[in-house]
Length: 124
Image (tube, rainbow, N blue to C red):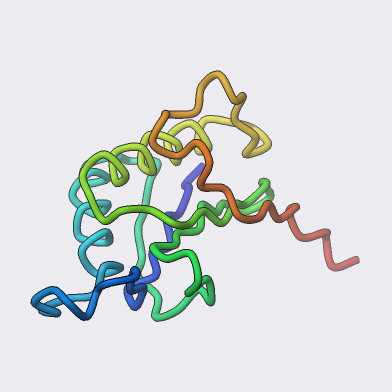
């Protein structure tokens, strides 16, 4: 089953305005995640403007239908973070419930979980 990585592309970390401001930190992380996820058949990425986690940017959501979904934040916009997010998303895609055992979490995502959302119930 496909797992989606939804990436906030408007996230700006503290001190963003002292850099060149050519792109937001969220845009930089999105580009890195998209590159790391390229060619992964069980992973899709999308960008969204604002996941409302501004205090702890950069933010992503790991989501799949009928599975636990997660919001993670406070990432540096770097290759290690992007690779860790994609590695976790791959494990999420392989999990029947979306739950990934802690021992299987990449180091780069530990300490970055913000919320866990249960799957939506059937509309019946």
